[in-house]
Length: 272
Image 1 (tube, rainbow, N blue to C red):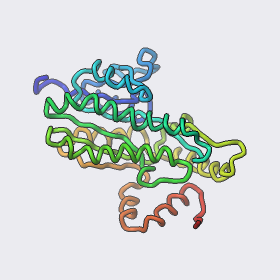
Image 2: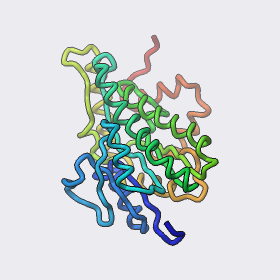
Image 3: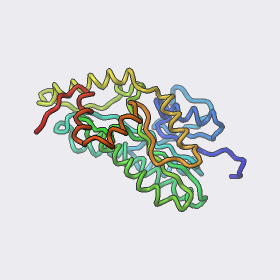
């Protein structure tokens, strides 16, 4: 690649939501963009300038094959994932393992696949797209919040490890997004669950909040801006009045933050 050649970006989950908007904006800026899909030949609404390649986060073997097909990657946007909600007791262990595979192990495997090339070329950017539920966890989202906390920890720890090789690693936390993701969310709640009533309160409140959430386009602008920054910060958040709530999080006792997060989702304060 010469100095005048466009950068190559690999965006996972590029067929809908944030991933599609990130791919669209990067292509509009003149980058060579690859977007992943589990079925690239059947993408319903392909984005001009985006080449689709196969990746299934739940199948770790596809990470290396995806990286091999794309070749040199300058910017990796680990966006693909699955939303999940449910009562902890009602969520089987094999389902917890599956969500960790999709939301954590898949992005980790793809990052490992592209890092050697970035290190050899002495340049590269990796963006881990998480969720503000990592910083502000709520009841009935424990598994999802845990996966997003894991990818944030990977990003923040890996940042210094690969910095000597010219590689930047960034964590980005979207707040509530108005992308219709609630319609695709995996749910685990038993019909006779003792948690059903409060789970439904959180589910209903979440649905209402999502209709007023930040747009995929606006969130993508933040991700693209961070990825292309000359000196990106380690962490970015957008949506849900992020500057204010993160400032309060630093000052307020942790229990108060948890109580407020629960209240926003319709749950009363309870002390065990």
